[in-house]
Image 1 (cartoon, helix red, strand yellow):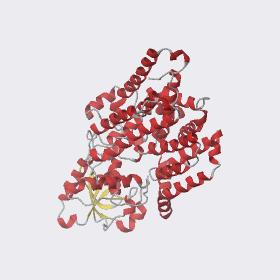
Image 2: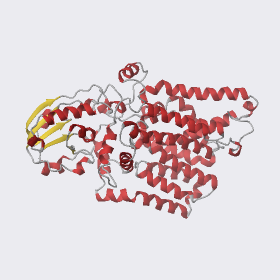
Image 3: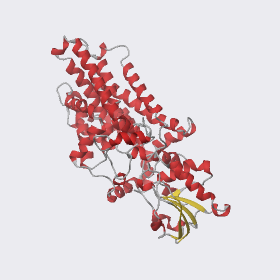
Image 4: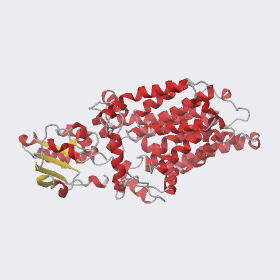
Length: 523
């Protein structure tokens, strides 16, 4: 609990990060205990396929997540526990890093522990850290950049720009959105007396370091004519994303971060704009600019999640400063009771929502639980409207079942026909599932025009015989002379757009080799 006489970090215990480490370990164990509850996530199957095609860039993401998949494939393996170990470790690191950032803001042992508890509480991170995807790693880079700036302010040492540049550059190899956060953090510095750190040659060294880390992917994008920008334009034009009103966006921020944390991150924002937090006010501006940017740009609700460690760390400091006020100093029992109540409040807040964000329940039990929620689970895309599960759960169901049905069709062909048969998927999830599970069924690798699969081409297939996945028969008849429904796939838990029949198509009207550039699907 807060100590009335201990207001400096030098008076902390010998092991100030012991409690945050324990909290992080519990968080890690919760993820590992539920790793095999459902199945492989759609994006993870895609990244594993990408790891067989190592490159400095991909149509829809930078290369870091693929490199981690490659390392995992050649070390721990690609079982579900081995794969989900990586995001779970990222989540534990985020918890400890948030506590470390709080200490830079002036936290003592109580608020350091509280910062860790706050970092372990938001619902969105249970979802992200249960998926082998970029979002689990993103907060590490954003918070790492903030920590470098905090150390620079705290030590008055501009050389920390080099660390900032290295973290930001590596973060760009994970997800491009860190560029927006870095810009807003610099803008925040410009609005405060700490702008003096912008007028130093070390910032050029930091920028050069960031560019050096980002350069391989930058050159790849130039060489491939900026496919990510084309992808984003196509997504925007498709209208598939749910466009939120400002009120709905802010409500989903509260829900995403778990309502129990609301007083703390608002308190953290207040701290930055108070006299006590004036030195670190740039973080407050960066937080406001980031939330405002994604609100105005109609970003998905979770795009802003990586900025919250800044507010939560400050919220922990603000809470302890509140308890160190004069009318609390002589009331250690009140301090103790308040501290216990705070941790209980956070625990209850996430425990009530935990089945929504972590697969702690069997799926049918979860559906019954979901039916009694007082709110609808937010949807970020219109194609989720008819799903009975949230997308983060739906995208873990049905993949091997689908591949097995494809294999039955493939085995029904003669060996000579099999040698000429392409398995043509409509999206990277289906293609990734065929590539991942297909080995055990003797299937060839899939082809697909979606995202980076397009760049890998149709190989030697002409379209003479094709097993189509994820396409309606009436749509396939535009391309093939013969289209037959040979199997059904109707897993009730999978996303609705995946529940399409499996088709056997013959005699493509236009050779697949020449038609490939015209059927690119980047969306």
